[in-house]
Amino acid sequence: MNERYEALSAAISARFGTALSSVSSHCGELTWEVDKTDLIRVVTALRDEDEFRFEMLVDVCGIDYLSYGQAEWQTDEATSTGFSRAAVPVNIVPDADTTFEPRRFAVVYHLLSISRNWRVRLRVFPGIENPPVVPSVVDVWAGANWFEREAFDLFGIQFEGHPDLRRILTDYGFIGHPFRKDFPVVGNVETRYDPDQGRVIYQPVSIEPRTLVPKVIRTDNRYASELKDEPEHE
Image 1: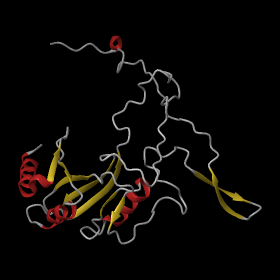
Image 2 (image 1 turned 135 degrees about the horizontal axis):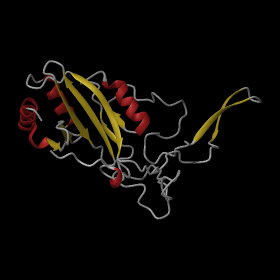
Image 3 (image 1 turned 90 degrees about the horizontal axis):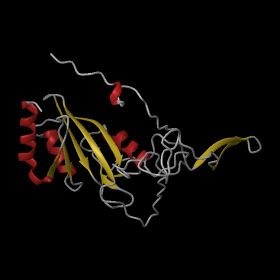
Image 4 (image 1 turned 135 degrees about the vertical axis):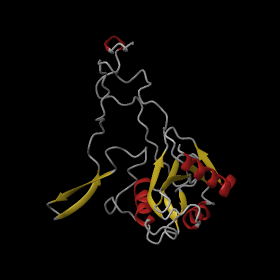
């Protein structure tokens, strides 16, 4: 992290105190976690106060941390080669009364200061609510409108106060949220043209679930120690 970003990090920490929690980074990027109850206050200050001037919201991203950090290949039932991805597929579809793990879903905001030429990220966890809900930042940055609609469509995260929260990428009548980790790869419904009815109809998906991600063992100098180049010595 260079001196400019060290100064920015110190200024943000001093300004917001315990409202922000720093997230460690291996590449020197600045990321903070903020509680959703403090989100609007924090982002408004980051936009308006002369010390920061984050005039631009570059992106809003949804994240599903379900099964995060779990190695799919740590199993005795899956083969070591070929197209076997996991011994027991995850298929958790919560009903309306089910709550989520507190840190399963997250929303990440990428901020850019054009006048100051620096960037930061903020991460917010909706908590255990079903559906997940965070405040909308459309009144702070109007450009958040479609970003939040995308996160709602793909992850099912709702943004309280959004002026027109509806799907933006999936089709009318689409069931579920396709970027959730427990969403079936083949989907829930399919469409086809019915010549007898003379229209497109929806029906339960008929595709057999299959995995297209191979596990390949490559025996080249990246993995085989006997094939690696010997280090040069002066």
